[in-house]
Length: 258
Ligand SMILES: Nc1ncnc2c1ncn2[C@@H]1O[C@H](COP(=O)(O)OP(=O)(O)OP(=O)(O)O)[C@@H](O)[C@H]1O
Ligand SMILES: [Mg+2]
Image 1 (cartoon, rainbow, N blue to C red):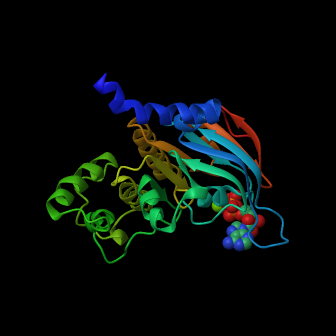
Image 2 (image 1 turned 90 degrees about the vertical axis):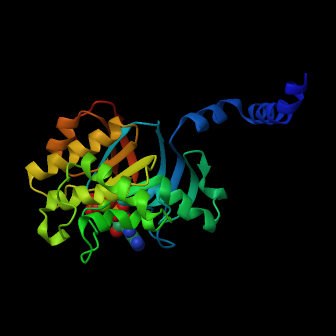
Image 3 (image 1 turned 90 degrees about the horizontal axis):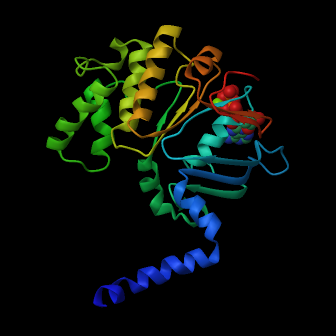
């Protein structure tokens, strides 16, 4: 009896939520990413870069976003990282409703989302170890824990032994894997990779993709944009195609088709 009264407020709350909207609550809790009719217009009067885009991504999914240059892929990713704000529509990531997100909560959100760019964005004057460690220093992790964590992450991206090198001393593919290590070292729920292989030759590109697959196997949701047809065909994952700001197809285990 005592136990029930202890849990009663919580039970009431759950019940209240179910009463308001049982179906959508279930969906929100289950999904990692929910976009509901999201539009983005950069400047008033111009054509929307995203036009009523709806997308559901479940935890641990691997989703490839393809589309012509200017289709809206990066815009979509920037809305997820909250680098840009949607003009209309609803975005919920990991249960966080972006309409209710306060500015001071944004750093916390960014810790849940790791990002990798085409041009790596490494710190040129820091070693590989320091580049990855920096992401942990930023969140106040102690030295001992950093020394413990960084080698594990460098091992995941197959860069053990390169800790003391400078970024210029690495190949493009290796640099991108450092960038991935830095993006995952805080154990984000989602990894966003915007054209991570754009500057790489096919061999190095595939090494990077294999690392993304490994991270996905560990349970991280991955969103990848690419123009590389061969990668899309080899991966055989869910492919979302954007054209002119709209999702025009969304297929499981798909190949490349524009
Ligand atoms: N900051 C901005 N201000 C104004 N317009 C922008 C801005 N960023 C993007 N756009 C416009 O939005 C549209 C979509 O751009 P976006 O960068 O999302 O395309 P993309 O699919 O990532 O292309 P790419 O494959 O070349 O990277 C384009 O028409 C672009 O010019
Ligand atoms: Mg882009």
